[in-house]
Amino acid sequence: MMTVDLALLLAMGVMFAGGIYLVLERSLTRILLGIVLINNGAIMLLFLSSGGTGLAPLFVRGRDPHEYADTLPQALILTAIVIGFAVVAFLTAMIYRSWLLVREDEVEVDAEDVKIARMPAWDAEDDAELVEESSEFLDDAADPNAHYEHATEARPQVQHATPAPQAPTGSGAASRGRRPEGGERA
Image 1 (cartoon, rainbow, N blue to C red):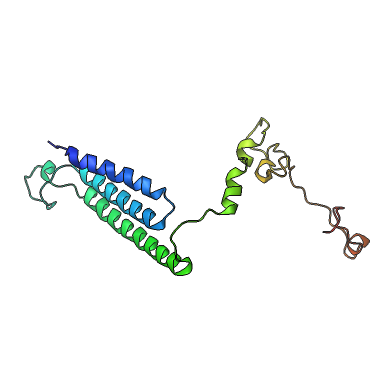
Image 2 (tube, rainbow, N blue to C red):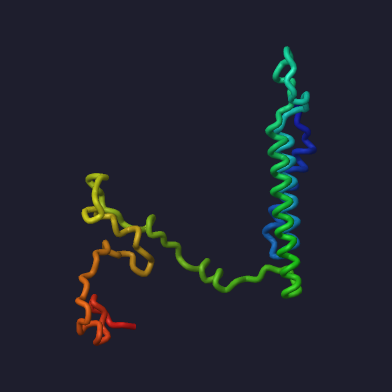
């Protein structure tokens, strides 16, 4: 019979809530503390879900298998500790480098990120209009939807690319500043 301590569950919930709150801050030091809290909350979650204590997992003839301790949660806890240590070491180095360069640990607002966040979402695969296909065994020349992978927001109606006729070498088109397709050179 396994009993779960309500105080440990409450402490785990507080660790996750506090960690998430701190990770959403702009200070790298607070982000580091939030990661530490989330990591410790995850370790406590694994510990609480591991079940009760048991005997060492050494085989003894005639012993009930349910008496042994489960080793999987122990391995997961050890893995969580190692990953948490690596993330904390990386963030500590990042904070140190930030302090050496600009004498602050605040994450600045990047103007390019703000521009990208304000752009309307357009996905070539989701927003392209596809034609109903009669067979899934079509070659690219007969596939009516072959163009949708090459569509972009600037050119949503891109047609299937066909090779342009090659101009003969030394033709007058290339020497007059024109491309073989007929467009002007930039």
